[in-house]
Length: 509
Image (tube, rainbow, N blue to C red; front, side, top):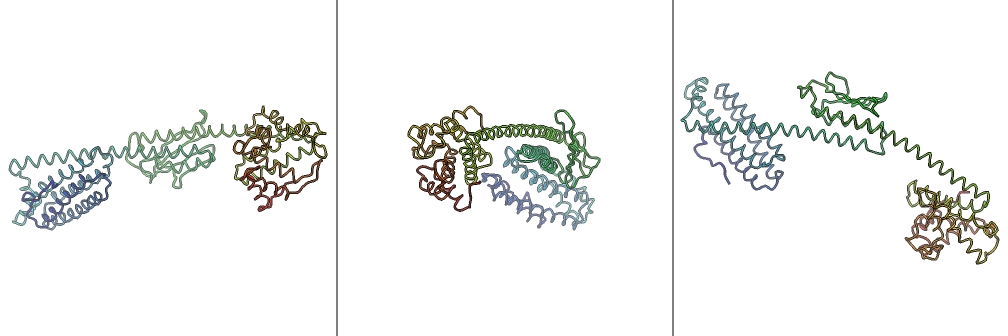
């Protein structure tokens, strides 16, 4: 659909100008068709046509300005004409860049182009053409300029006045839009800066010093002129600054308070003077941003201190807790050195299997604790039964089997961070349900208990006992291989076999 149709009303009598105007009108019509047809303001064809329009306008303006100088048109008109060209390029670029924020971008853009083209071609360029014609007819540039100021017939003059007013109104709206978008852009910069800093200071895996160093590098991104912005954090005698930092008269600062006590300062400087904005060279939003960053850093320091105190407290508890475990183990050694040594070695084997499975340090520590306590129920069984040489009677065997339940009863009241009591209860369960005391099968058995079960068999078979000689590690590994999948968890068995046969692991003495 053609908004403009080339006819005699557009003709200026200047062949070069008319030819370029005709092409420019065709481009604006094409841009209008693309605007109407596009589903998105980002369509490649629409963007391409806009770029053509802008580039051709620059070419056309340059040609007109050259022609006016060659024809000695009055400088006052040339200056006005050039300003009109520059204004168009600025306005249409501003509107294009703001297209995503316009409520009706198609109507706004197309309306602006139509208003400009009508006013420029029918008004400004016709004035230029009249002056060139008068100069060629013998008038001076000044005379031609004054004659061109004389209104044409009243109807044409009223039309041009209306077009001029429309163009002026659209230009004013465009300036307002650019201002709003500028403010919006600044707000987005400030929000991004605050978001990035907040994400950084809530990082659990970063030290306080590292956070301060990275925050100061992020800060200039939130200011209106980031390329000439530098920043510094002074905190508890330490200084963190951007690479371009230097003190200047154009400063914005905020205090870092920790628990109401001054602990440091945030400072932002402009490296050169800029126009005063709000109450100085900085925006009010930037003042709010700096105060917010200072508040966030103060809260971070307070939180980190609390976390460190909590970690120290937890560490002290864990040390006391593990000391209690060692005391229990030591007391067991005094009564039954064989069982105590067995538990210690099972704990070491289970720990190694956990590492082979890729478990983290905390889960491995749980295996170590459970290994050291899994047979604690044995200490309640008479020593003459536990250490009896030869085969046990059925009654004695049932008594020994009870150690799993006794161990559970002893441990269940202790609030371990791992399921130690349940592991002690289940370490004689087997994958096919043939174990004791509950006859659990497969996944119903805790994975930690499945690991302790394998470690228990390895240690028991490879070590000396009062009732038999050691069978050796090879026999123990053969047993695990034989019972893989039926008695012992497949993944755990494979990790154990790999550990001993491929990686050369040996049971610590």
